[in-house]
Image 1 (cartoon, one colour):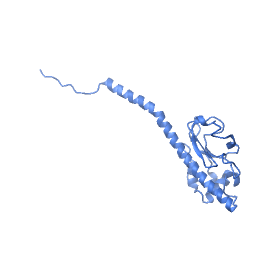
Image 2: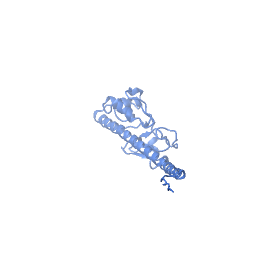
Image 3: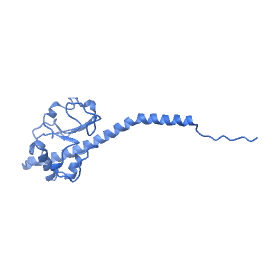
Image 4: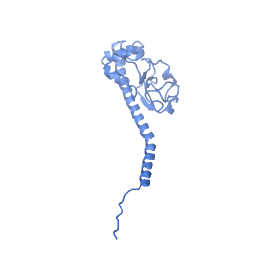
Length: 196
């Protein structure tokens, strides 16, 4: 009598158990991965805001030394979006394409090669501050933040997952939604000026 050798293999039940465990682990990891992705995107947007700040700060420093009223902080060069943006681009502080790129964020992409007058802030809100504004006033925020309203889950660029604030002092940070109404982080005086 011949003995049949049994082939070692997984049974259907064993395969289903393994697949179920993998699915459970993936569902537990997905929120953490999504949160890390949003934090990374918010950090990139904060970096973009820093570039706009540096260009504006340099323009403001030049405006003080030369007396040029076409460059500087938004409130000091006409108090309009177009005047401030033209000052940055025409003054050589930033190219049109770089400026459009700095105003974009995940989900809110600006077209390249666009005239400055056609570019409007969308991912980043610019506040109309000037040389006389305090250092604690917000200069830039992500567009999903509106003081003091709670963040909306559908607001671009980050919904209610995160928002950024960049102050006139040069300090900037990425915050979580639960910090949106924390007055110690966002002084009320920061938002007394209008936003473009």
